[in-house]
Length: 497
Image (cartoon, rainbow, N blue to C red; front, top):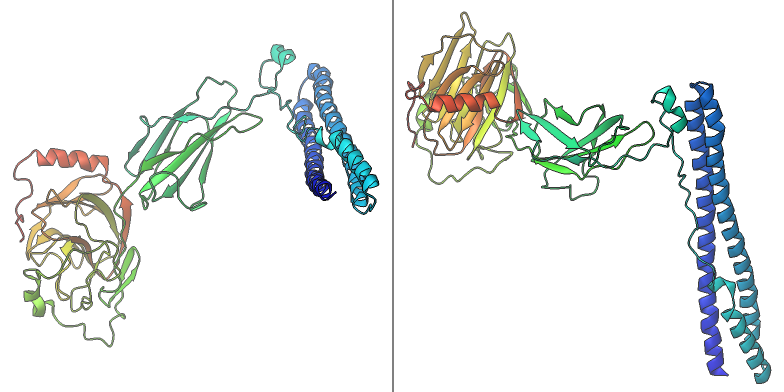
């Protein structure tokens, strides 16, 4: 009897679990049925909108196509209703059997208990709960979608529902990253003349591949692209990579996205180091402005000549500067005296880099260049053997010159609105360009022996900095041409140890 009780307990437990499964399945069927009704209503509503603008021939087709949708709805609804009815009956019978089994546990007479147990076993064996399928016979998706009414009148009688477009394929060979622009090229796996437009999405990331953190960055969207390529221009490359994906759309639906494509978009990104800038300079990330009230109460009127000897040989104890350091010049004091200077917060230790600077129209004096980290707090750009710059002076009369080691070479050309700075650390080359026309202004050739910091001097005005820029293609071509010529702009050339 004990063994029979244990067996009956297992049967009861199994039956209870099955009841739960059936109840969950009933909920799923109900939800699917609602979905069929909702989706079919949506499809019919969209179909109504298309038919309203067509000729009488379409009115005849409308009834037929609507009937197709309704027939599918009726068919699916009937199938789901039948399954609901079967599941409800099975659940009712199962609950009755479960109640009978529970009462049987209280039977004291062994013979009667055995008889009841056999009856329960036979009924469980034949129970419909174990024979019904717990998978919906139909889904709530409607096979009849929106029709394409863009064809000629003679084709209307052969109307077909639009298929979902396949996922495009991005062509990595044809994609191009240059001049802070990215061109993405894709193709369809097979010809599809029903496609109306494409949607391109992109996002920035510092990971080679998809972002490792879910929803790390949001996708940005470019919609209604008619061709199979698109160029994003004017980008700031402030991350190492960009992800791209494309999907095709017809008049009814959008297809699946293509496999994401990851392209490398590295460029030098830096800000201005406010911690060591002159007190008369107001620094905000990528903008510096002369502020005559900033140094009041401070002893910042000392002439820069008093510390001229400090800018000689760099200390052998100082090590390489780590990128993006908030205190790039260590614990040294701010620039002071007449050295109205601010440095970048990122050191250049290798590679080719490019950035641009725009001066305010009324700026009286400014310099743009690079310097070693040991530039003294009284030193001025271009007046030491560890700094190189191009200097513009609009005070009284305009002068334009390249400066290094307290030597200047006048430049006989118009001062551009924007100055581009090209630094080839490994090649020992620093060039300045008209950022708009890419005209070469001047080139320093030397051997850089320490990490370089972008440097800026401004008096009575302001400078706006643009970083995250690739070396422009025009600059690359000019560099190749210039490097093929000997003695180009070498009057201030030296080798700094």
